[in-house]
Amino acid sequence: MNHFDVMSSLESMTLLVDTREQPTQNLQRRISISGLPAERKKLEAGDYSCKCKLPDGTELDFSNVVSIERKMSIDELCMCFGSQRKRFEREFQRAAAAGIKIYLIVEGGSWEKLYTGKYKSKMTPQALIASINAFRSRYGMQLDFCKAETTGRLIRDILYRELKEYLEGSECDGICQN
Image (cartoon, rainbow, N blue to C red; front, side):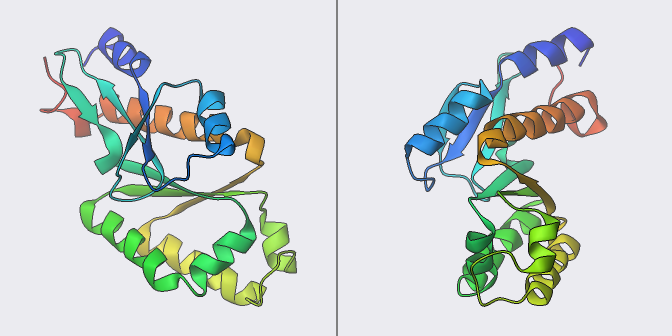
């Protein structure tokens, strides 16, 4: 793809939101802040991905390449690594088996809060950090912390860059040709 084709495809980017994401005002705010049109769809892994139109008019569903899982707090993350660990790990296993790169965004978190145990859970900092690092190693999980008001922009920026790199790169050869 040439530069103009890549830019045209990026301009057509639509945010895909998993149907299991609760349709709350916070979700609407995240979508609005992302600045992208959004479509609800059952995603194999994660809460967010994207799609775009290719120069030949076909649609590229990027949810089988990159996905973003969002957690509203460290407390929720502790539940995922604690009582909900089997379900949470199955999602990452599905992503890994399908070759999907997965990002994890935790709102209101930081490494400092993790290391000092500044969250509401019986999970120790050592256990939580070990679990995070195990998932990073096993599943290639990318971890980002942000404030809730930044989540929509971060989701858009991660997906935009991943899609741009994909469209410009060799992964797109054969799929993205005119």
